[in-house]
Length: 230
Image (cartoon, rainbow, N blue to C red; front, side, top):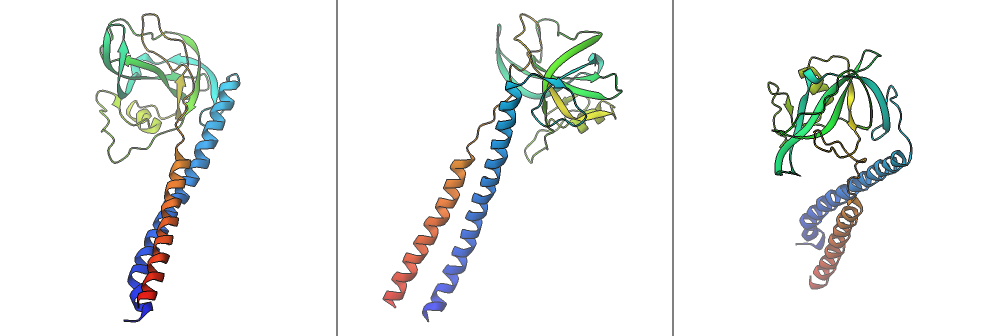
């Protein structure tokens, strides 16, 4: 068997693995740039005052909006255990439509509530003024729980799906996450600040590119050793 023939099989396998590893590293590099952009926008929003809700807001923009809450169409999102004054309790986020003077509706995440709250929920009637940030729509994954449409309990934060279940055809394609202080004795418990997602993508970039480089070095050493032994 010639040297070239001997290297053909291992070389093709190494090439496939190199392409895969480099592809994973490049994908993580793209995710790194995306995450850095998200964190930069979060920093800007945290420093700035809220702006009136524009027609097409960017994700994580801090905005203010007025309208009337539709408590009769309240829904729940997610499942999360939190510590309460009476101990840990299972709960979810309360999603309430806000009808605006413009005629459209914004779905508002007013905060976490226990599944069985001990006291009344804070669902003000009449006109309200809310401050919050824009949260983009989620996409259901392979392992996402199935939404319970009859109970209005959703496990993927998809404004279009939630609005369709609530029969709100003019709802905005995003969620407004309300910002506020910790409640004294009533629910919901709103967000205190904008989210700051972890950014570990640089470590993944180094890992995948490092594995690709290591694999290339190992193959070269093995090929050279084989040629000497031949």
